[in-house]
Image (tube, rainbow, N blue to C red; front, top):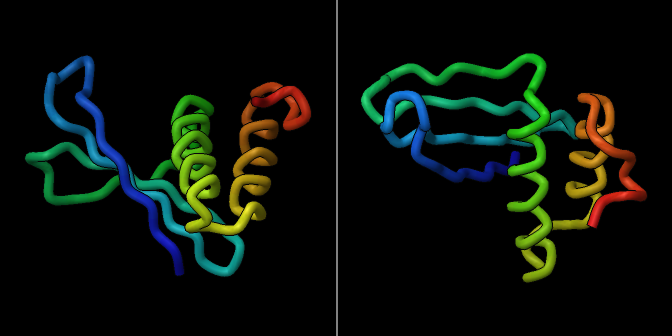
Length: 91
């Protein structure tokens, strides 16, 4: 099981929002929480904006040779299924 985490400031509450994406058996799950919350909320389906952030994170890790390119390709397919541009049009 691989896990990737990142955070950003939530524009509505101005609190830190934490994200965690985990891959288990070729299936990705994405969860989020605010800094003061104890529970993680799982996205189902995952919004396109979060998938694009995850793809950027994974692409940077791939360029540093920390993850296989198949992980990036899987997220590309998920982005396309969520209404994003085709994987061939991504940079």
